Image 1: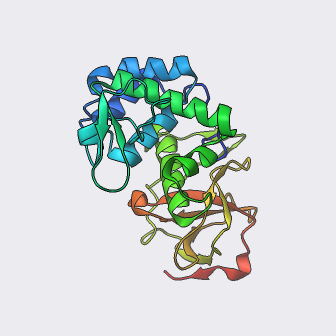
Image 2: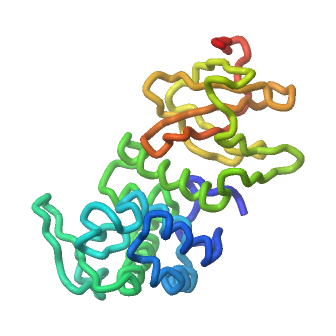
Image 3: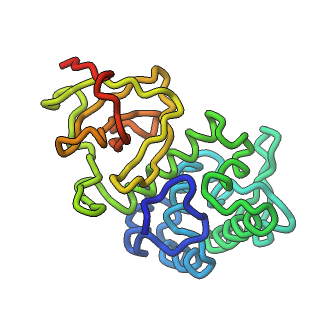
Length: 262
């Protein structure tokens, strides 16, 4: 299965196991932990990628431990809709102009969440994570707010599937740099001008990761890769979720623009 990226479908086979799903909920002491195995099974039965659902649960509410979800018991801060949130136990209006569905348990919440995701696909043809998340948060696709939101989810999905220290390969080349490379004290520390909007890749087979949307257009660069300038390893930190930064590959870097700084 290709690495998760913004163009991955919302409806897809599971990338992680039920045990991994529950263990991730436990990292934040999520109130959904007791119902985690059943929630996972419902997502699989409904065809919704559990990694995507989990990533959205985290970005929306830190797995149910923060924000409106502490009151609503909702999976993704779902707005109340009589046709979609049919298992809701009530409504919650915090005064921000929105009315959210409330739930007595996460079994009901995840069933309505799946109903929303299927409705997006069936009614609006929003089949990809990129498309669905834009509508979910009510922002224009490709806007700064949307890119931060979707990139955070994709970064989480990759970490769910490939935890720190776990390597994966495409062909004969390792494609995961990982946080073990220090962007300041590494043996090769360079800067490379990466223009905003540059398409970045996680893998040497061209797996798409995200677009670089950093504030300065500069990124730490470790390369060339395997002695070849076909790929360069780039360290980027595009939002608060990248506190430990993200390493990814950029195709065909221009070596004339690389500046050694350390």
